[in-house]
Image 1 (cartoon, rainbow, N blue to C red):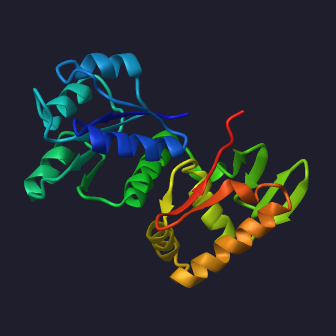
Image 2 (spheres, rainbow, N blue to C red):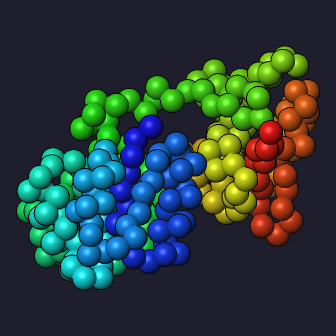
Image 3 (cartoon, helix red, strand yellow):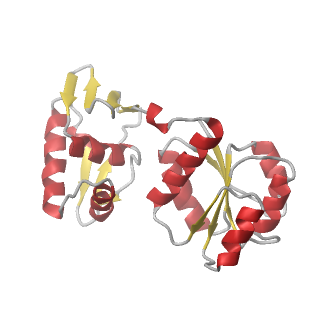
Amino acid sequence: MFKLLLIEDDVTLFNEIKDRLTGWSYDVYGIADFSKVMQEFTSIKPHLVIIDIQLPKFDGFHWCRMIRAHSNVPIIFLSSRDHPTDMVMSMQLGADDFIQKPFHFDVLIAKIQATLRRVYNYNTEQIKLKTWNKATVDYENNTVSNEAGSIELTKNEIFILKQLVEQKNKIISREELIKSLWDDERFVSDNTLTVNVNRLRKKLDDLGLGRYIETKVGQGYMAVEEVI
Protein backbone atom coordinates (compact mmCIF):
# COMPACT_ATOMS: atom_id res chain seq x y z
CA MET A 1 0.00 0.00 0.00
CA PHE A 2 1.36 3.41 -0.97
CA LYS A 3 1.64 5.98 1.82
CA LEU A 4 0.52 9.51 0.92
CA LEU A 5 1.22 12.56 3.08
CA LEU A 6 -1.52 15.18 2.62
CA ILE A 7 -0.36 18.56 3.94
CA GLU A 8 -3.67 20.44 4.02
CA ASP A 9 -4.96 22.65 6.87
CA ASP A 10 -8.60 22.74 5.70
CA VAL A 11 -9.97 19.95 7.89
CA THR A 12 -13.11 19.41 5.83
CA LEU A 13 -11.18 19.14 2.57
CA PHE A 14 -8.52 16.97 4.20
CA ASN A 15 -11.12 14.49 5.47
CA GLU A 16 -12.88 14.39 2.11
CA ILE A 17 -9.68 13.74 0.17
CA LYS A 18 -8.47 11.20 2.74
CA ASP A 19 -11.79 9.33 2.61
CA ARG A 20 -11.74 9.19 -1.19
CA LEU A 21 -8.09 8.14 -1.44
CA THR A 22 -8.53 5.50 1.26
CA GLY A 23 -11.26 4.04 -0.96
CA TRP A 24 -8.57 3.60 -3.62
CA SER A 25 -6.42 1.64 -1.14
CA TYR A 26 -3.98 4.42 -0.36
CA ASP A 27 -2.75 4.97 3.20
CA VAL A 28 -3.24 8.70 3.86
CA TYR A 29 -1.53 10.69 6.62
CA GLY A 30 -2.00 14.29 7.72
CA ILE A 31 -0.14 16.90 9.77
CA ALA A 32 -1.07 17.54 13.40
CA ASP A 33 1.42 20.36 14.02
CA PHE A 34 2.23 22.55 11.00
CA SER A 35 5.46 23.72 12.61
CA LYS A 36 6.74 20.14 12.54
CA VAL A 37 6.07 19.10 8.96
CA MET A 38 9.57 17.73 8.43
CA GLN A 39 9.42 15.64 11.59
CA GLU A 40 6.15 14.12 10.36
CA PHE A 41 7.60 13.59 6.88
CA THR A 42 10.67 11.82 8.28
CA SER A 43 8.54 9.64 10.53
CA ILE A 44 5.99 8.64 7.89
CA LYS A 45 8.37 8.20 4.93
CA PRO A 46 5.58 8.73 2.36
CA HIS A 47 5.74 7.57 -1.25
CA LEU A 48 4.09 10.82 -2.40
CA VAL A 49 3.34 14.23 -0.87
CA ILE A 50 0.28 16.35 -1.67
CA ILE A 51 0.68 19.89 -0.37
CA ASP A 52 -1.31 23.12 -0.27
CA ILE A 53 0.47 26.45 -0.79
CA GLN A 54 -1.32 28.46 1.90
CA LEU A 55 -0.56 26.84 5.24
CA PRO A 56 -0.10 27.94 8.87
CA LYS A 57 3.41 28.84 10.04
CA PHE A 58 5.17 28.45 6.66
CA ASP A 59 3.74 28.11 3.16
CA GLY A 60 3.88 25.06 0.94
CA PHE A 61 6.84 26.42 -1.01
CA HIS A 62 8.91 26.46 2.19
CA TRP A 63 8.10 22.84 2.96
CA CYS A 64 8.71 21.82 -0.65
CA ARG A 65 12.23 23.30 -0.38
CA MET A 66 12.81 21.49 2.91
CA ILE A 67 11.60 18.16 1.53
CA ARG A 68 13.65 18.52 -1.65
CA ALA A 69 16.78 19.15 0.45
CA HIS A 70 16.42 15.64 1.83
CA SER A 71 14.32 13.60 -0.59
CA ASN A 72 13.25 13.13 -4.21
CA VAL A 73 9.79 11.90 -3.18
CA PRO A 74 7.16 13.05 -5.73
CA ILE A 75 5.23 16.18 -4.74
CA ILE A 76 1.88 17.40 -6.04
CA PHE A 77 0.70 20.92 -5.17
CA LEU A 78 -2.96 21.75 -4.53
CA SER A 79 -3.85 25.43 -4.50
CA SER A 80 -6.76 27.83 -4.86
CA ARG A 81 -4.29 30.44 -6.09
CA ASP A 82 -4.43 30.77 -9.87
CA HIS A 83 -1.49 33.05 -10.62
CA PRO A 84 0.88 31.49 -13.21
CA THR A 85 3.88 32.33 -11.03
CA ASP A 86 2.63 29.89 -8.38
CA MET A 87 2.74 27.02 -10.84
CA VAL A 88 6.12 28.13 -12.17
CA MET A 89 7.49 28.45 -8.64
CA SER A 90 6.25 24.99 -7.65
CA MET A 91 7.91 23.40 -10.67
CA GLN A 92 11.16 25.30 -10.10
CA LEU A 93 11.22 23.97 -6.55
CA GLY A 94 10.95 20.42 -7.83
CA ALA A 95 7.22 19.64 -7.65
CA ASP A 96 5.94 16.96 -10.00
CA ASP A 97 2.49 18.44 -10.65
CA PHE A 98 0.14 21.29 -9.79
CA ILE A 99 -3.66 21.06 -9.38
CA GLN A 100 -5.82 24.14 -8.95
CA LYS A 101 -8.75 24.13 -6.52
CA PRO A 102 -11.58 23.42 -6.89
CA PHE A 103 -10.78 20.19 -8.68
CA HIS A 104 -12.60 17.01 -9.67
CA PHE A 105 -11.44 14.03 -7.63
CA ASP A 106 -10.96 11.96 -10.81
CA VAL A 107 -8.30 14.47 -11.89
CA LEU A 108 -6.47 14.12 -8.59
CA ILE A 109 -6.50 10.31 -8.60
CA ALA A 110 -5.38 10.22 -12.24
CA LYS A 111 -2.42 12.49 -11.49
CA ILE A 112 -1.51 10.49 -8.39
CA GLN A 113 -1.59 7.23 -10.33
CA ALA A 114 0.40 8.69 -13.22
CA THR A 115 3.04 10.03 -10.83
CA LEU A 116 3.34 6.74 -8.94
CA ARG A 117 3.62 4.81 -12.20
CA ARG A 118 6.38 7.09 -13.41
CA VAL A 119 8.37 7.18 -10.16
CA TYR A 120 7.88 3.64 -8.89
CA ASN A 121 7.21 1.82 -12.15
CA TYR A 122 3.84 0.91 -10.67
CA ASN A 123 1.09 -0.25 -13.00
CA THR A 124 -2.34 0.59 -11.61
CA GLU A 125 -3.87 -1.86 -14.07
CA GLN A 126 -2.50 -4.62 -11.85
CA ILE A 127 -5.32 -3.83 -9.42
CA LYS A 128 -7.91 -6.04 -11.08
CA LEU A 129 -9.51 -7.85 -8.15
CA LYS A 130 -11.48 -6.45 -5.23
CA THR A 131 -12.93 -8.31 -2.27
CA TRP A 132 -16.40 -7.16 -1.23
CA ASN A 133 -18.62 -8.98 1.26
CA LYS A 134 -16.63 -12.21 0.78
CA ALA A 135 -17.10 -11.97 -2.99
CA THR A 136 -14.39 -11.36 -5.58
CA VAL A 137 -15.05 -8.54 -8.04
CA ASP A 138 -12.94 -9.05 -11.16
CA TYR A 139 -12.66 -5.74 -13.01
CA GLU A 140 -10.78 -7.29 -15.92
CA ASN A 141 -13.20 -10.11 -16.70
CA ASN A 142 -16.36 -8.26 -15.60
CA THR A 143 -17.37 -10.96 -13.14
CA VAL A 144 -18.39 -11.27 -9.51
CA SER A 145 -18.03 -14.59 -7.72
CA ASN A 146 -18.46 -16.13 -4.30
CA GLU A 147 -19.33 -19.53 -2.85
CA ALA A 148 -22.80 -19.27 -4.42
CA GLY A 149 -21.40 -19.05 -7.96
CA SER A 150 -20.35 -16.46 -10.51
CA ILE A 151 -22.12 -13.82 -12.59
CA GLU A 152 -21.01 -11.82 -15.62
CA LEU A 153 -21.69 -8.11 -15.85
CA THR A 154 -21.85 -5.69 -18.76
CA LYS A 155 -19.22 -2.96 -19.11
CA ASN A 156 -21.58 -0.37 -17.64
CA GLU A 157 -22.59 -2.63 -14.77
CA ILE A 158 -19.01 -3.46 -13.75
CA PHE A 159 -18.06 0.21 -14.05
CA ILE A 160 -20.93 1.27 -11.79
CA LEU A 161 -20.14 -1.49 -9.30
CA LYS A 162 -16.48 -0.46 -9.29
CA GLN A 163 -17.36 3.16 -8.48
CA LEU A 164 -19.57 2.03 -5.60
CA VAL A 165 -17.27 -0.67 -4.20
CA GLU A 166 -14.17 1.54 -4.30
CA GLN A 167 -16.07 3.98 -2.06
CA LYS A 168 -18.00 1.41 -0.05
CA ASN A 169 -20.27 2.58 2.77
CA LYS A 170 -20.40 6.02 1.21
CA ILE A 171 -23.30 7.48 -0.74
CA ILE A 172 -22.37 8.19 -4.36
CA SER A 173 -24.72 10.65 -6.00
CA ARG A 174 -26.43 9.86 -9.28
CA GLU A 175 -24.76 12.94 -10.75
CA GLU A 176 -21.30 11.67 -9.78
CA LEU A 177 -21.95 8.25 -11.29
CA ILE A 178 -23.27 9.73 -14.51
CA LYS A 179 -20.31 12.11 -14.74
CA SER A 180 -17.86 9.23 -14.18
CA LEU A 181 -19.51 7.23 -16.95
CA TRP A 182 -19.51 10.29 -19.21
CA ASP A 183 -15.81 10.96 -18.55
CA ASP A 184 -15.09 7.34 -19.39
CA GLU A 185 -16.79 7.84 -22.78
CA ARG A 186 -19.84 5.83 -21.81
CA PHE A 187 -22.80 8.16 -22.20
CA VAL A 188 -25.43 7.28 -19.62
CA SER A 189 -28.60 9.27 -19.02
CA ASP A 190 -30.40 9.43 -15.70
CA ASN A 191 -32.94 6.82 -16.81
CA THR A 192 -30.26 4.54 -18.22
CA LEU A 193 -28.39 4.70 -14.91
CA THR A 194 -31.52 3.53 -13.08
CA VAL A 195 -31.95 0.63 -15.48
CA ASN A 196 -28.30 -0.41 -15.15
CA VAL A 197 -28.35 -0.27 -11.35
CA ASN A 198 -31.55 -2.33 -11.23
CA ARG A 199 -30.07 -4.94 -13.57
CA LEU A 200 -26.85 -4.98 -11.55
CA ARG A 201 -28.75 -5.51 -8.31
CA LYS A 202 -30.87 -8.29 -9.87
CA LYS A 203 -27.75 -10.14 -11.07
CA LEU A 204 -26.11 -9.73 -7.67
CA ASP A 205 -29.23 -11.28 -6.10
CA ASP A 206 -28.11 -14.60 -7.60
CA LEU A 207 -25.09 -14.43 -5.27
CA GLY A 208 -27.02 -13.04 -2.32
CA LEU A 209 -25.40 -9.63 -2.80
CA GLY A 210 -28.19 -7.52 -4.25
CA ARG A 211 -29.22 -6.19 -0.85
CA TYR A 212 -25.78 -4.63 -0.42
CA ILE A 213 -26.44 -2.10 -3.19
CA GLU A 214 -28.68 0.37 -1.42
CA THR A 215 -30.71 3.16 -2.99
CA LYS A 216 -30.65 6.35 -0.95
CA VAL A 217 -33.73 8.25 -2.07
CA GLY A 218 -32.89 11.73 -3.26
CA GLN A 219 -29.17 11.12 -2.72
CA GLY A 220 -27.81 8.24 -4.82
CA TYR A 221 -26.48 4.73 -4.22
CA MET A 222 -24.20 3.00 -1.74
CA ALA A 223 -22.33 -0.31 -1.74
CA VAL A 224 -22.56 -1.58 1.81
CA GLU A 225 -19.67 -3.59 3.28
CA GLU A 226 -20.97 -5.96 5.93
CA VAL A 227 -19.07 -5.71 9.20
CA ILE A 228 -17.97 -9.17 10.28
